[in-house]
Amino acid sequence: MRAARLLLTVPLLVTVVACSPDADGESAKPAAAPQAGSCWELTGQQLDPGSAVTATEQEPTDCAASHNAITVDVVDLPLGQETALGELAQAGERLDAADDETWETVVLPGCAPIYGQAFASAAVDVNDKWAQAAYRATSLAPRVWLPTADQWADGQRWMRCDLVSLTETPLPIDAPGLDLGTVPEELALCLKVDSAGTTPLACDDPQANAQTLVTVVRNGKTPMDSAPAEDGYGADVAQMVCQDVVTAAYPTVTGEVKAAIPGVHGITGTFDCYIDRAAGAPLVT
Image (cartoon, rainbow, N blue to C red; front, side, top):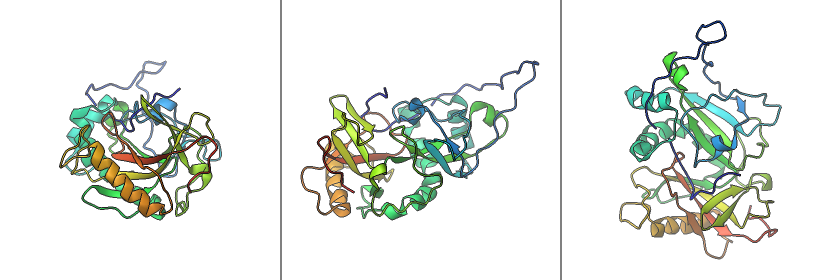
C-alpha cells in the first residue's frame, strides 16, 4: 500500500557510480536517452511523491499496453546548472531540504512550458502573488526525471517531463493533448484524508473520503511553510488560495474547501485543494 502523505515530496546526495560490468566483464551500455511519446509502467514507489527519486532506470513500455506514465517532452538542462543537477542525477535519491530550492527553481521550470500546454484547457485564473498557475485537478500529475548515474557518466544531459497517474491506475491516454475543460470521471482524483495526511485514490475506492478539485502550482517566490507566514504558504494562506481557485473553477461548489499542504519538501512544486466527499456521492466534474 502506498504511504499516506501530506502531499508532495522530493530527492539528493552525491556518489558517482560506474556502469555495472556485464557477464563478459565489460561495462554495460547505459540506457539511451528517453524520447517524447514514450510510455512507462512505473512502480508505486516511483509514483508516490512521498518516496519518488530524481532518476529511474525504468524501461519504456508499448503505449498500446497498460501504462501509468507518458513522456510529454525531453528537454536540455538549463545553462550553467550542470554541476548542481549532476549531483542530484548521480545520487538518484530523494531530495532533502537543501535541494528543494534547486528542484523548484531549476528543474521544474524546465518542464513548465510543456506542462502548461498539457493542462492549458484545465487552467484556472489565479492571483499570481501566490501562484504561478492553477488547473482543474485530475489523476494526472507532472513528474520530472534526471538521467541515472550511468547515463550521466555516459554524457547524457536532459530532463524527462512525464505525466503520471497519481493513483497507480493505467492512464486512459496514449498521448498528451487532452481537453480538460471538463474533467472526465475516469480522470477525477479522490483522496483518503486522515490523521496521517492525504493519499491519492481512485474515486471508486471505498476508502476515499474527499475529492481534489484544483491543483495549485506555486510561484517559487513563496516557500511552503508549516505555519502561517507573511511571505510563505502557511495553512491560512493555502486555504485562502484554495477557496479562490475552487470558486473560480467550480462556482456551484459549496461547503468548506481545504488545502492539502505538503508535510515534506515537494518534488512537483504544487499543492492540492479538496472538498470532503462521502463514498458514492456524485463527483464534481
